[in-house]
Amino acid sequence: MGEEVKMAETATAAAAAAASTRTPHFVLVHGIGGGAWCWYKIRTLMESSGYTVSCLDLTGAGINPTDPNTVLTMDDYNKPLLDFLSTLPDDKQVILVGHSAGGLCVTQASGKFPGKIGVAVYVAATMLKHGLQTDQDLKDGAPDLSGFGDVNDLTFGLGPDKPPTSAIIKKEFQRNIIYHMSPLEDSTLAAMLVKPGPFTALLTAKFPKEDDEGVESVRRVFIKTAQDRVVKPEQQDAMIARWAPVEVFTLDSDHSPFFSAPFLLFGLLVKVAASL
Figure 1 (cartoon, rainbow, N blue to C red):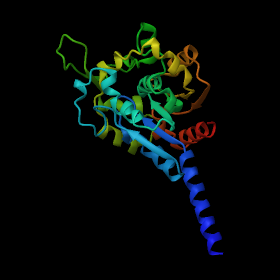
Figure 2 (figure 1 turned 90 degrees about the vertical axis):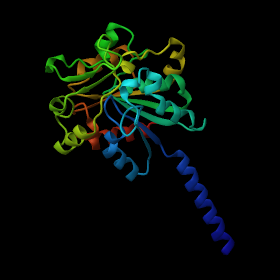
Figure 3 (figure 1 turned 135 degrees about the vertical axis):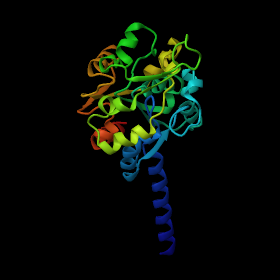
Figure 4 (figure 1 turned 180 degrees about the vertical axis):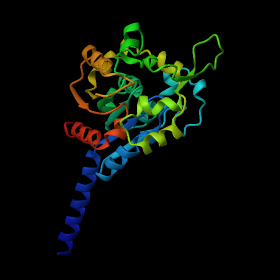
């Protein structure tokens, strides 16, 4: 009897270990000005449900101490994500989720580490195969907030005659533009934590056509935000039409569904994980 109990315990442990290797691993990437903190509601829901979650601060974002005005290339900005994927074992895959400008980070990572990404999820995100190379790319993928007035604080770290090196939406405009459907406590938290983002690095994000094979091999899902005032619905539709993902979902939310519709966003991400 003792031997049978021991064998049963061994089998149970082996099954638990096997199950843990199959547990979906989500890697969540914030947008410009944000940080890992943006995902606190989603991370709580995921980890409470048994999923593995990694939330990254990109260079100069969140608690990363780098001055964003010194982050001048996409390689530099996206280094924490690229480093994370480079250390991931070759037999492991993640569900890579990018919000807003984090979509550029997801696309770059897909080109460099296609075998390590089970699915790429773009949440109200810039989804352009080659980055921001043309006027059409800028029209479709870059926010145009001119309709709200003079809303950006720009820093010209390379000199007044050079393009801005970082940008942040002025605090008095943030709720109306980014969080207008979100709980007031979340937009208050965001106003305390949002930092200038590396404007130059994002606007010069260009991905080589040599990476097309890898990028195309990664399954893509797009989650639209129907009330978005940053990446407007028509921009999202344009990017989806140009580079069709395998599936499109829509949330009735502002630009920040991790605040305004966390349970619905969580449900969609779980649905994506279940489809793998």
